[in-house]
Image 1 (tube, helix red, strand yellow):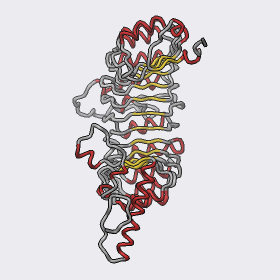
Image 2: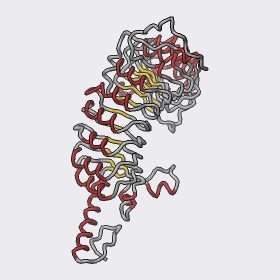
Image 3: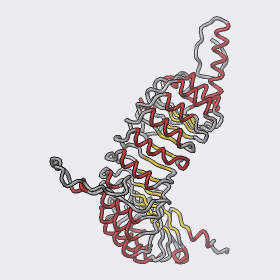
Length: 445
């Protein structure tokens, strides 16, 4: 009988090691599927027997406990990366043990693991080789610990801090490089209620994050334009920046982002209602290598913003969900001037008609995905049969207006609309009323 492939035994996916040989050889344990049947009570002893692990992913074991992580930290001296995304029972206790016992990790994913500032600061100060750090969904994390990340984790390429509601501008690098002393003779301003977090001085750093490429600060509602200015000054080579759900950002923040120039490839500014066409014009003319832009729910934008974005030669994904001022002119312009477009989201843009969507699917040969949920024209007879199935969690009303076309369905939709256009022309030529059909027949009656 052939012996098991050693290389296959080094990486075990969605199961636990079953033999002593596997336990000795396994280097990468990956459990991402929550339905694979693996629970924490079975994982904990394996952390003792598998002593040569280099990376561990336990995002599929949602009941992972501190006990398991403590065993991992004490028994594995070669660990380089750990993913505990969504492991809500892991606490500061095991993270502190991880910091104390393991060698410097290179990547750490702790999104959804509720940590305090003490643990986050310890991670930043103890793991100087970190290249990737994910700390999304941290309701207790404040500016104090995030300042330590910027100060000590200087090799980061990816930093995720989304949905951390306590973060303020003081958590991020300051755009100023030196503190300006206040004249002592001036009368101080009246005192106002504040917390000690409000008294933190600006974070002035002497180094720059030249390795940082991906930064996610989505849904941190306290951030302002000043924080974006500081980020761009400190991390001038960012390729992907996500600032969705930061309602205080204005065109000034977009102008700061524009300074990233040719380096910026992906930008998310969804749910930033104060952004206008002026900011997008500046962005499109400076960041000409943009490939993906998300401007969903930026309600002040008009066709002018789309005209500028359409000039980007490399753009392949554009999200314009619930931008109510968009008209058919924007869609026509995209179709005629953006041959690179592959994915377009136009849901709930009420002024867009089926005529412009027809022109879009006929002209954009690379288009592989189009969403038009809630667009009145997409409710036309026969169009719905080309849509992808709606998600199961939608209510009946939402399912009735769901329109998302992808892959072969776009070609089929184009063929159907071409046929209906020809039928309309024939009906007009014969001076008879045009009646839309939902099937593929060419009959006029």
